[in-house]
Image (cartoon, rainbow, N blue to C red):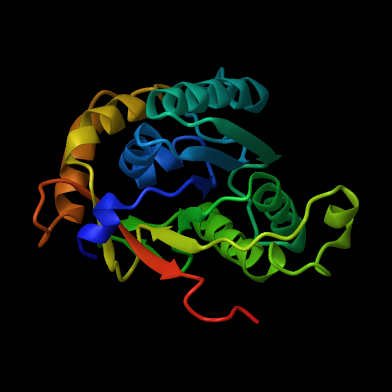
Length: 242
């Protein structure tokens, strides 16, 4: 995508991910750029991240608290304003109707212009990483919540009863896509992305800063800048959505 994407700043954006720390890998540079320019960013973290420890003394309940604190600290560095932690169990996520309803609730509540989430079609990433099943489940449910559930008045009528009117998201940005078509230059916010990743010491060591550099370079391959985050971008308001 051309210069228009580099200049684009939505009024509001929602990031839906499976685990605390996913957003920092996936979209931290883009979020930092947008928040710096005035966008209101909301993080929705679907699971508690309560399985991510090899410490035999760690308990799921204690890890849940630690990981939420880490996520809030990382988001604060990037300029994230709102957080929702849905509390699903880590490792067992499925794109159920219950999850779709919970995500539809968040979309109608915060009414984002742009939704960023995982590309649910990405089974393997970069030829070296089998994509976590929770990532794919979260992406699937997020896309289905955005379209058509958040838009359709008669879907999940209990949300209407709670005063949550339908909302049409204008753009869907899928991170870690199998076929990227949009690249955001994160060269001037790469340091912030590194620092945000380092806010997750329960999961990540100091070497993650070097990983972020390599990942940014890999995603920017063929682009006129050194570091990038890549997406598949779907503009929802080009054609009628009926």
